[in-house]
Each structure stands twice: as structure tokens, then as C-alpha cells.
Length: 250
Image 1 (spheres, rainbow, N blue to C red):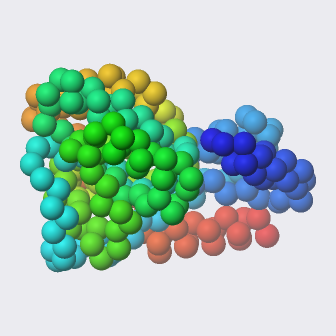
Image 2 (cartoon, helix red, strand yellow):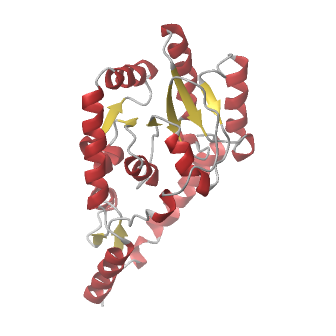
């Protein structure tokens, strides 16, 4: 991240730590975050309540043709943030070109989102990678099902998440997930995803090609994703979990 972003994050962490003494109960969305809070801040009052999943907004009719072209199309549905690691797509795209693979990377950012977003899009043009990296810009919620229907998988080389709904969306739409070999991703996806080193573009491409050459294994990952999805709680279940925690605390 740039210096301004680093400074803002440091300030947030400073005030977070300073005010922990006023907290009677901390609620984390995953067991992983609970363990981190306990280890880093020596907390003893952390409860886990998983994030709820809303599937209503994931269904819908075909509303928009994104004209994504031929080949295998891998989607990264995200706003631009430095920790999303979109820059790794530049050397990855060059490697795809060098190997002659029919793979396209679909992204959804705009130059107004961040200075580095503008720089990234300029680099795509400067390096002649428009045929590999295809930016459709920000997508309206009602068009998201159409976008998933026109792509072949989720490619998410993120460096930092807590609970990402993007994984859930990919599972719901029956798409294979290619993502970072980091604890937050494995905590949610388990064996329902293909994992790679997010800072090694060759490793990313190798994992993608490995899955493309194994259609049966890819279907098993998709089926496992549906199982993970069914195990996630509803909003009603989350509400009752919060009420139990509140009653216990009181």
C-alpha cells in the first residue's frame, strides 16, 4: 500500500488497541479471527458468530451481455484496493501470452476508485494486454448473476480478507475458485478451492492449467463448494446466536 494507506491503517490499529480496555465482549466472524485476536491482543472475551449469507440477490434472469469473447474466462469481482493484489495480473497476463493459453482475466474496477487503479489500467494498455485482461468496470448487483453465467471461474489473488462474500457467490453459481494460499481463504473455502502463491504469477497459472486439465477434479471442488455453502447460517440463525451471546453477557 502507499504511505497514506499505511498511515491510516496504523492509526486505526493504534486506536483499536488503545480502546480494547473498554470492551466487555468481542465478536469475530470466524474462528481464525478469534485466534488472532486472542494471540495478538491477549483477549479472553471473544465469541464467534459466523457471517450470514443472503442468496436472494444472487439469483436473477440474464440481464446483460458483457461480450467477454472466447476462451476460459476467470472473474475477479472487486472494487480496487491495494490488498486485492490486482497488479499480479500484469505479469500473469504476459505469461499467459507467452505460453499461448486461451485464458482471459475479467476485472471490474474503474480508474476513479484509486490512483493505482488508473495506473494499472494504463499499464494494461501500455503492455498490450487488453486481450488477456478485460475490464468491464463496476457491475450493478442485478447484473452480477449474468456476469457469473458468462465466466468460468473465480480468480482471487487477494492478500487480506476477513470474510469474503465473493467466495460464497462463486460457490452459489457453481464456479471453481482459484485463490491465495492464505489462512483466511482456507478457513472459509477448505478443500473447495484451488490455492496458489498470490505473489508468484507462474504458480497461479500452473494451478489454473492443472485444474483445466482435470475436469473431474474441478467438478469435485464445485460440489464441495455447494456443501460449504449449505453449512453457512441464515440471518435468522445469526440473530439467535447474537441474542444468546447478549443474554450470556448480561
